Image (cartoon, rainbow, N blue to C red):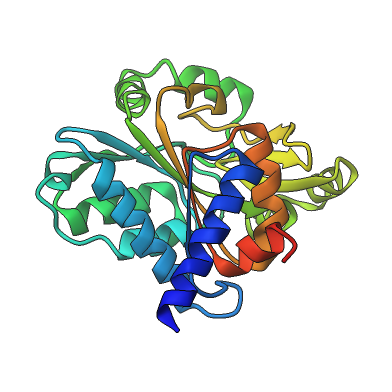
Length: 253
Ligand code: G3H
């Protein structure tokens, strides 16, 4: 019944907090690898959490992916959110437009009544182009807004699946295999110990700049269990929003 299910989730949340070192864990019913509606539930839980912590005038940085797209779809008009600004946390990572951070932050803003700012950066930046772009006034302005963000929301992906989805090329996929990459989160690839083994060159928030920000990680589905574990070894988030499928696999239940 409902009560037993709720109690079951609370128990999983406590165990996840202990295992991952996150301050808060939120577990929703189901397994998003098995059923599509579970992603909407992840989205709903994430939006509730965002509304709980949002303060007037806040800046929120969001990343891309299908999970974050589902979160944006669950946003409803809100008085506080209407005073805030959504920005992409980092520039292009080689994703389809529907699941790019730019598109998703605009969608968050459209549905909540907030403002948004876009970050226009090509996906594959050469070292040279990178260094001249960050000197552009318009880019520096939006980077300042991104740096001022109070909350960061991001997904976590399985490393090899993410590289394949982003058409990263066979040599790169071979490198990930050799280096035993497990997780991907906002353009960084991690091994099982949570060590960074590769970073996609794009501008925006760097992993080392999350200090002092409220970080919400959203990832579900049993096939993401190892990726979630690896990423949290690098830096446990303030909140993990996940589903039963990922939680049970993570805790080997
Ligand atoms: O960075 C992590 C990935 O964006 C996760 O993507 O939500 O489509 O699984 P996904």
